[in-house]
Image: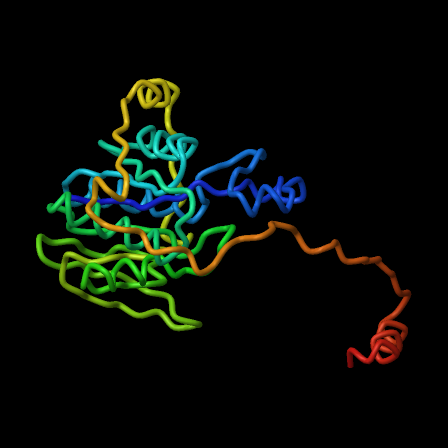
Amino acid sequence: MKYLVCVKQAPDTAELPKVKAEEAASGELSIQLVVNPWDEHALESAIQSSEDYGGSVGVITVGGEKAIDALRSGLAMGCAEATLIEDTEADAWGVATLLAAAIEQMGDVDLVFTGQLTVDGNSGMVPIALARKLGWPVLTGVAKIIEVTDDSIVVERVVGEARLTVKTQAPAVLSVIKEIGEPRYPTFIKIRKAARVKIPTLTASDLGVDAPAPVVQMDNYRKPPARDAHVQLFDNASDLVDALLAEKVL
C-alpha cells in the first residue's frame, strides 16, 4: 500500500499582519512559513495508517524552493520520500493539475491524503479537483480511518452534525479534518536525518503538462481588526436581564 500526502507551505497565521500587499501579490512572503496545519493532520493520518495496515508514505508539494522545508517536516514525521513540484504561480486548479500528473507518473499510489483546508486560501478545492483530474473517488470531512485493505477503505466522515461511515474503492483521495488525530512530534534525530535528504524537484515540463494560467490570485493577507469588548458585572439577575433587553439581545 502506497500513501501520498499533499502538503502546502503556508503563512504562520500569527504573522499575517506583517504581510505587505505587494508580497502577497508576488507570492514572495518574508514572514515565517509553516506546514499548513490541516496538512499536518493529513500526515499523521497517513503515517498512522501505514503503521496499522502496512505500506509506505510519501509527501509532495507544489511551490518554490522554500517549500522544501515543508517536505522535510513530513520526512521528519515519518514519510519515506518527498517530491517538490516547482511552481509558484499555480492556483488551486493548477496545483491539482500538477499533482495529478505527478501521481500518474508515480503509478503506484493507492491513497492520497490532504488537509481539508489551507489557512491562506481556505477554499478546500484542491482535493476535489485532484480527484476529478485522476478520476478517483474523493471523501471529504474524514475524521477517522476505520479500515484499509488492498482495494478499499472505510472511513468516518463528519457532515454537518451527522457522522457517516463510508466505504469506497482504492485508489481514492481523502480530505481529512483535524479530529483525525494530533500530529506527532518528530525526534531531534529524525529532524537531523530529514535535513540531509536530497529531495528531487520536478517541473511542469518534467510531468508533461502545461499548468493552466491562474484565474484566482491572492492580493493580500490580513486579519480582521480586533473587536472592542468589555466585561460588566451585575449584582443580580434582574440587572443582567435589564441590560440584555437594553442591548436588544433578548
